Amino acid sequence: MTTNLDARLTSYSAPVLSIFRIVFGLLFTLHGAQKVLAWPTGMQAGPGDFTGPAVPVGTWPYWWAGLLEIVLGLLITVGLFTRIAAFIAAGQMAVAYFWQHLPKAFFPIENGGEPAILFCFGFLLLVAMGAGAWSIDALRQGRAVVRS
Image (cartoon, rainbow, N blue to C red; front, side, top):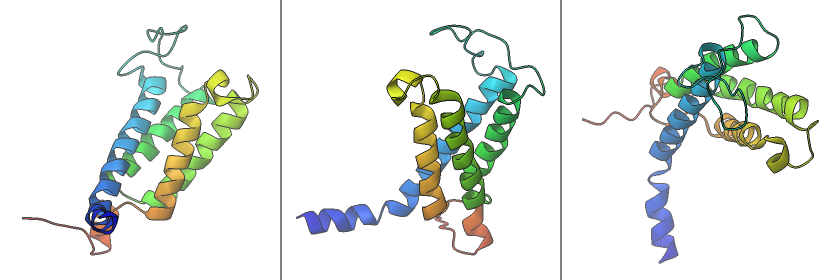
């Protein structure tokens, strides 16, 4: 029974990896857009309040982090240069955790660092696994899945 289930689920791994990459990339893009553009919600002005303005242009490190998140998130979403973009994004999230979250408290639940950790390890998964079948990377390498 489990062998059949494993075989059936394995046949879905390529499309599911692509869906994971697309959703993860979009979420990362929105993470950056919130900082740089105050879109789709404003920056967090207080606990639970996301009505503040965007980070002023050029503000170190937040504006630059947001710009990286938008660019890397879009590359990851479309699956272009996915491994290198995910590697840079994982590094950015590791730096964000150790620089911005860990000094506040040890446990991620206390310091608000769960998103940084989840993004970091999700991006490391994409570094190891690649973009999946539904990506520009796969098209460039001639291995994309095209269904008619």
